[in-house]
Length: 598
Image (spheres, rainbow, N blue to C red):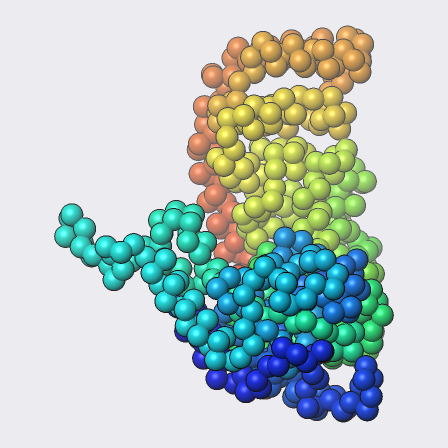
């Protein structure tokens, strides 16, 4: 259990506390000239002092909030938690609080139960607290041993503390008791469940005793967010910039970082843009294995265009952003010269890619120019897209945003051939909804059929019925869809169980009557009255309609077409292969020593 590792950290606690000492004593790595004034020492000396304090259990941490912490310098006893390997740290109710750290505290150790010292009256003496406090290290050691034994007997039932044979003769592992250390139900042993925290009570501490801003290693928190919180804390307390201590409770690994080792001009923008990647969770998890300064360096170098390559990148951007300048040979020449046309980069305030820029250009062209598929640039456009996909280009923030917002605006879509290629390269698109496919017909677009099928299979009946109503809403009809698109969507929805009943028809009549007169043409050559008649006829005859009867065959055929298209794109066969080249900076980062944070 974690508690064994937590006890091991006590062997480094070598200073005997004195409950009569009026304030926290600073570590020997800092020099005191007079009370309340500390002289700065070289950064590496400070870094090593914090590293040793954290590794040896001499770093005490506390959650604070600016509104209340200013009063803590008047002698009021306050609780801290020791940073120990294997021992969990306290989780505050208010997740917006900060954690500060002090070194070598002269303090009192808590015995039997946690100290409720969050909001005591100002000036409360230690002997007046409603908790038993002990002043010697041996008492803390005994307390932790007691926690270990108490945890064991409280977690497991008496009859099965080492497992048991069930009635069927199969051996059953020990189970946690319900309600003990995070076990709300009887589940298998969880060694990382919450245990009592190794708390101490500090009777005095001052502003100058705060030595660091403390965070636990996390797969989800951005470096830029941590720095922002640290600066908020420093400003609220009126103190100089603090070192950042990053601690892992499970392994005991610790690193000490400074602002200039982490921050960069575009760090926050780059980290936020990572959310748009398909595998953003995996990217973050892998990046967190690196020391934090190396993470920041890798992110900045991975998305920032080097000055010497600015001219080539500008050429590449021009080749994919302007249909009049599309040129497959020129982009291929740039690739063969060594330009990584697959990578993502920072451009116009966001992380994007040549594929993103090309998709924006083609979508604008498709939505604004009639007959665009016949213009001479189309062949070059197809070849450009295939070159980018074959090179390993991926969708970044703008590309995913474009796909997610299809259907929001009048006729906002992309060329169907391009949508089919994207489905072949990146599907399934987990974030797509039926509304995103409003402007994509289900005839002549296998990618649309595949995605429509994926969405409907996951939708409960209520959502399918809502999708039917939205398909016939004034908002949808104001986009001037073709009758073929509306019909193909409705027939497919009927196949999955959506029902065009009298209630829906009455709602459609009422909604359209609010916006139009009966003789107003709303879709192709149909007036409101004509559209209602058309709906009535479709409802009555849909079960004999060839598209409805053959829907499963359409889906099967579409999947085969997308499979063949994927093969024709010559994409790598292994999962997420298209992501790897665009994130080469991660490979480069792990090639630098040290490979792991320690």
